[in-house]
Amino acid sequence: MAMPKWERKARIFLCVFGLFLSVYALHVELSRERNPEYRAMCDLGESVSCSKVFTSRWGRGFGLVQFFVAKDSLLNQPNSVLGLIFYTLQMGLGLSLTKKAAMFLVFASWVSVAGSLYLASILAFVLGDFCLVCVSTYVVNFALLFTNLRRRTAIEGTKEKAG
Image 1: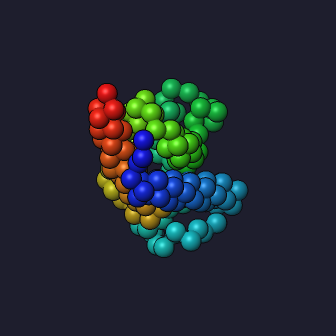
Image 2: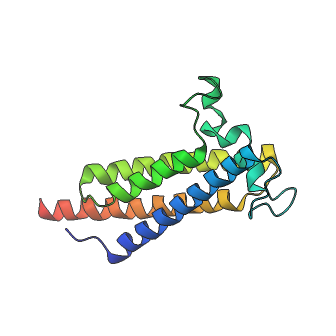
């Protein structure tokens, strides 16, 4: 079964870019925790500050996990760690051409888009901030959803022709 050539290239680009953004976000958060005076490259002004966002309560466990476990619990990870897991799974499962893998990729993408919409609303309406790294991550998540929907359609079409 052959997938369109653009799909593999797009997935690799999006996942590598998402991994880069997640690693950078984690670096900024850890640097800011060690040194409160740390100024990240993405801190361009008072209302354009990624480190302000990453170190807010919504920067860990979407600001929700702390209601169920201790704030410093192992389960309350930075959102960037969740991003590292998500983009690694997207890249790894993208190697499989099974219908189950395609369905999981789509499901995971819908979850990431829901999370992106939630965090974007927090960014805009609660924090009143613009985070270039965050918005870039949202764009990557929407693009992965589009890529995964196209993949699922192609796989289902191929299976129907074969069956």
